Length: 82
Image (cartoon, rainbow, N blue to C red):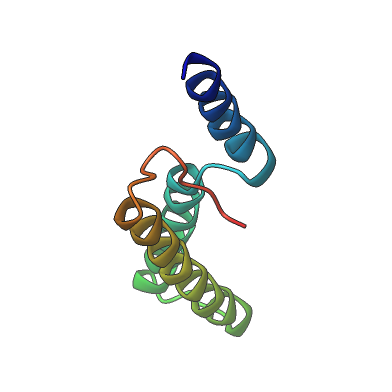
């Protein structure tokens, strides 16, 4: 049983290294959305930024979905994007 536990731990680390940490990506996307919202509040929002914000919000929703799926499956340590 010890070998299986060790392998499971190594697999979790590999998944995060290869696919990335959802929590970190979600934090980065949220920060960029906040930056764009600040620009909008100043009245300087251009069309390109509007489109970027729409794309970021879609990405954010997808990250939340993946994070919830990982937690629901009992793999809260396997918070990966892939």
